[in-house]
Length: 163
Image 1: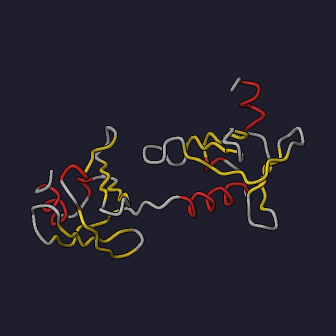
Image 2: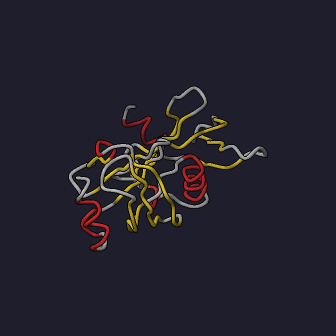
């Protein structure tokens, strides 16, 4: 995308049609129905770099920083991302059934208490330079630990046994 087209791509209006799909209108009057927001960096920088993609998979809009976007576009994009993405954030690890895998974990997440089965130690991955972890369960759901060292003492003790 050239500098000129990127500048145009950030100036758009966004609305929902009668079917609830996002419609982007460019400054030149082009309408793109069924637009889907896609995060460029969903874990490292979820608020930065959001591409708006049409039904053919082509980028038709770009948002440098979601928090800088005016309403109602910001709210519409947040709603669309929320329905499309599902990655609970682990707040604490309450218990594990055993310290060998597979085992069942009971955790507190930003979406409530849940249990999941950890298949193997390799399903816990470090991400980025931060202290973040991704933990995958047997169903393929990814759980995010934003900072493993910010967890409570019990959670860190349990986590240390698997790393």
